[in-house]
Amino acid sequence: MTRMETGRLLLRPFEEGDRPGYRAIRLKPGVTRFLPSHTEYPAEAARRADAAVEAFREAWKQDGYGPWAVVERASGHLVGHLGLRRLPERGETELLFLIDPDAQGRGYATEGGRAALAYGFDRLALPAVAAFALPENAASIAVLERLGMRRSAGLVRAFGLEVLRFGIEVRDFQRRAQGE
Image (tube, rainbow, N blue to C red):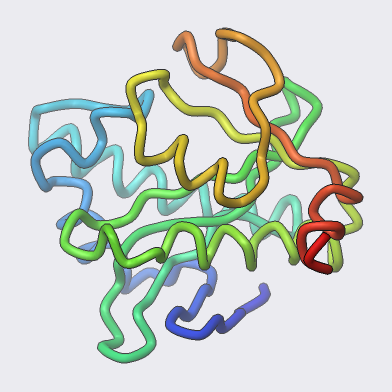
């Protein structure tokens, strides 16, 4: 299970002790409004947060990669999840992220997303990575565009929702990394 550091973040697989902090993030109003697992009921939101942590941990065991816990290096605080997830039903790998509202606006999703894409292309030899966002999720769409991901289709059905699909291929990521 790989740990990575960026300028301001530690990206590491979730640990059992992360559950309370991750629950607290997911229980904040509006945090999950753009996720398929969205609920306004605190008990259900806590259950779904625990299930997500378990699914992320299982992904690392099964696939050798998965979403990381995102930790601010300066404070040591858990601020969300970010990383890659294999989608066998779609035949692709997805970039996904959720950042605590108290830590949003600092560029963490872009910084971590860039590291996750580099990991996927350089270490996992993925040919491409996809991402999905609801059309009204302007903040996530902006992150995906900053990462060089392009809208690759109109609305598609994924995770029981009508979403926009974005994608980036290894050669396009490498060109961006080289400053072309």
